[in-house]
Amino acid sequence: MRLFDTYTRGLFELPPPPGPIRMYFCGPTVYQRIHIGNARPFVLSMWLKRWLEESGYDVRLAENITDINDKIYLAAPGHSAELAAEASRWYVDDTDLLGLGRPDHEPKATETVPEIVDLIGRLVDRGLAYPAGGDVYFRVAAFPEYGRLSGREGDHEALHNPSEEAEREELKEDPRDFALWKAHKEGEDTVWESPWGPGRPGWHIECSAMAEKFLGPVFEIHGGGIDLIFPHHENELAQSRGAGSEFARMWMHNGLLELTGEKMSKSLGNIVSLREAVQEWGREAILLFFMNSAWRKPIDFSDEVMAQASAQAETFRNYFVGLDSEPGEIDRDSLARVLDDDFNTAGALALFHDWRARGQTASLRWGLELFGLGDLAQAVSAPDGLVALAEKRQEARASRDFDEADRLRGEIEGQGWEVRDVADGFELVPK
Ligand SMILES: [Zn+2]
Image (cartoon, rainbow, N blue to C red; front, side, top):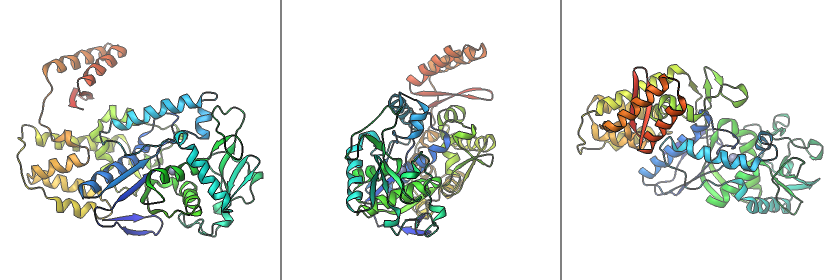
């Protein structure tokens, strides 16, 4: 199997099964509900894990939760820890809606501080980091490989480290340096002890320590959004290799979500949360939307493309109505041809439509299940009691009694079904 590697700008050949394949994907910084764009690396990593396991690999996936960060302090002055804990639960609940399972490890920065402090100590001992004013900075000049991942090598200007977090520029030996440890500041409600004084870790070192803690000093795949290449991943790589670990053998960076051509970000205010999107279009349409594009390319999110994704979900669902589950040949080779070639999920989706058109039911059911779309392959209808609840909910909505409508939705969900609003009423789908 081959995957495009950011570091070499070429295809990386995975070792033959069973590997192992150890993967680390950067997860969210938790201070609000995640938006649908944040779901893309989660979906990609879970699909890849499922396919590699299907292919006979021994896979271990770690996906972190960043629960120490300036954004969290700013979002909840004086009670950042409570907000981070709550938003971590939101993240797990919301990604659970996708029905893809969970990574093997979901470490939190707050649970990894001893390993982080240890790693910073190793860098200081090797002359790759220096304490200054209660902070500790990485000494970029001592790591000649710096900039290779992002292709900014040698370009001093482009390697200045205005990280997303505020840093004290006057303490740095070189504007390219970045903080590993930050002295405690007034107003920050969480603080840890370290040999350099009380404070808390910088963002980049958290991932280096968590990857090593759960995957060891070398692992096969490091993933995340393309916006993380610089400085976040450049810094992770410098820290870990600087400390003597081989670190990731290849890097995969997914394209970002764009909202009618504009990059989707929280600051623009054009946010659709993952939870809202699932409620609006259903999980299958969301998954088909991601499946329909190349993971490295930007992906355009609009009502129009979501309507197309919903229509595709219906096409598959309708195919299975009244169809008995019969055993049949599974055409694994055809799917392997597209997925082993840089994980071409759009090619897989085209193949599924082809299988549908040719009546290859067993292959189609198997393929859909692999991508978490097994519900589309079920020819079941909801029991009468649930239909009555869904009708009552519709009446409540019509009379604008949204509390009652939400209560009824909860009751339906409690019985393992999901109610969706569609143009001519509602639809009941097994969860
Ligand atoms: Zn990271």
